[in-house]
Amino acid sequence: MASGEMSAAVLRALGKPLEIETRARPVPGPGQVLIRVLAAGLCHTDLHLADGSAVTPPLPIVLGHEIAGEIAEIGPGVTAAPGDRVLAYYYEGCGHCTWCADGSENLCPAPAAKVGFDSDGGLCEYYLAGARSLVPIADTVSFAEAAVLGCSGTTAVRVVRSVARTAPGETLTVIGAGGVGLAVVQVAVADGARVIAVDPHAPSREQARRYGAHAVVDPLAVDPVAAVHDATEGAGCDVVVDTVGNAHTPGQAVRMTGTRGRVVLVGYTGKPATLDVLDVVVRESEIRGSVGATLADAHTVMRMAEDGLIRGHVEAEYPLAQVNEALARLAAGEVTGRLVVTP
View 1 (spheres, rainbow, N blue to C red):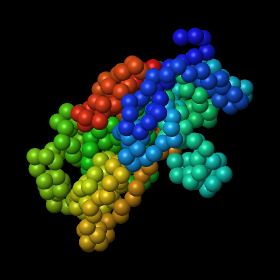
View 2 (tube, rainbow, N blue to C red):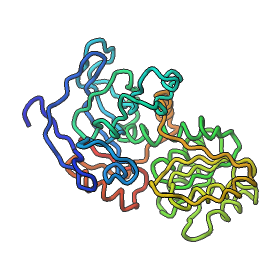
View 3 (cartoon, one colour):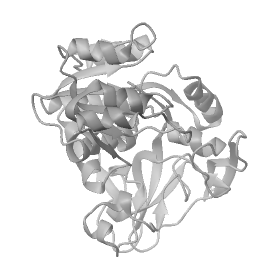
View 4 (cartoon, rainbow, N blue to C red):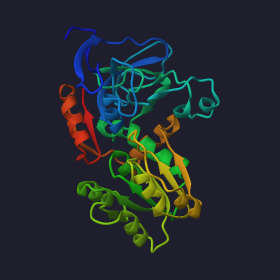
């Protein structure tokens, strides 16, 4: 490949494999850095984007919003230095609305960019980032773990602390022990909660136990709602986090809670879900959604990783040329944690 060029995995048509293309390497302008991408995590959202099932991206686009690497070049006015290890936060808000002023760029109604969703992401050799989006990665944290924590870990921090407002001693059930679910387990355990993990995939349940879950439930073997009530001596949970979001799990989440329990919906499929309003009414349940995370959450999760309080669970790494193989494996539903592409 000629100097000044790079490889990128490009989505050109919904439902079609990504195409490996040669592109010009970006040049950083004022306030920007060029990151040599050393790890790009794959998220279930990438599957939704690739087939247009829940979110339709502009085409062509380079997917990937979990981006970690080293700074290769800096533009004018940047204080970071080449060689710095960094995670790239993937929201760029408008900078003017009340949400941006509050630091909640993930809720900005008119963001300048949502990396990997509506603008090119990190499934490429080099990624151009704004300097303000950079989060330092400690030398003790691998690029692969940092990348997946940039989405799963930040989402978990926001869900457990800001949205669910989980207190020490409370019981939290997480439906789905994938990348986000395993991160929710770790954050909740670190914050002193008692955790129950529900997942049909045995290796994911076992990993949840290793990360500190007090109990695990196989929803294919038992009634998950009854199992959660048994585990809480009939009281139900204080918090349920649904990372799956299929037709049944939101309703199950409500029935798992006790009186005035909090349900946080994170996962989605783009299809309708069944929810019995009476279940919500009689419990005085609180139901909230949670989308993405803030830049502050990204800094928090990298500090937690440095302190050994959270791990980004990476099952396997793939070269960029095998990105479609990795996405197919993710779609099959048998991955524990996350898969990572290493451009």
